[in-house]
Figure 1 (cartoon, rainbow, N blue to C red):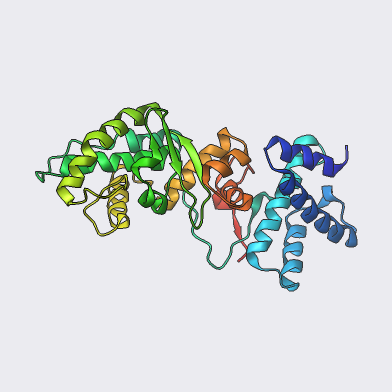
Figure 2 (figure 1 turned 90 degrees about the horizontal axis):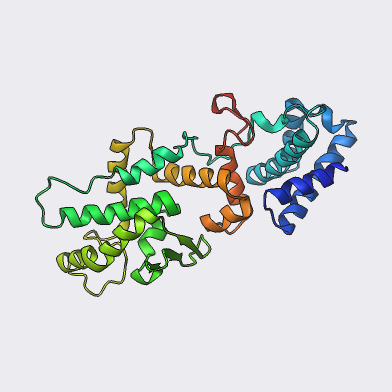
Length: 302
């Protein structure tokens, strides 16, 4: 079978769209033309040759972010060949590459499924705090934690959720289109539904009364000026609960990385609300099993 056909079949199995497949094939066509001009057969291309190609792209003025996208496409090409012909392609030569942009953030270890779920199940709502709103606020916070852990929602999306966005009867939450994210409808976990119903019909009304926000249609009613201030406190509490947790970004990255092991990439793109497949692809770098890469073996190029 032709190598590009191998790539096409591999990407189809991953759930990539036709446009994404064509884009990846075009990127690899350019890469293979470069390799041919240097009399390099694909099976002999290793780390050093890939570094040469990165240097070639930089000399041509290709920006770092675009190079990252190119290397993701090339990584898929070699992974397809590795899976179909392990004898001639025993490893994926892109495995040790990490093309960093100037704004690259430090990689954080992913939380696994059990650790993520524990953030929600172990979140304590039985507080000793004597404030009248303490227990109601803790229940609201647990609702927010559940939406982060099970639906992968981040601070901007959480701050915009309204009561109308939640369909408790059918166990769904609808995310409206934002400046950075697409709209989508996600399922609530069974464990979330009962608490969500009680929160909307009882606890939330208590908070509205206490904070003087009876006219607010926001799901997560808070006494703060904006939701972000409350969100920071929630993350601070979660960090005490789980020492491996470093940030809200790491939490969402862990959720999306976990999804990539359970669903095809097009489904994950929808669930995460990403407008471009490249945004979802970036999380594959966090999946150490996907390309068989260890963080301590990464070679920074930026």
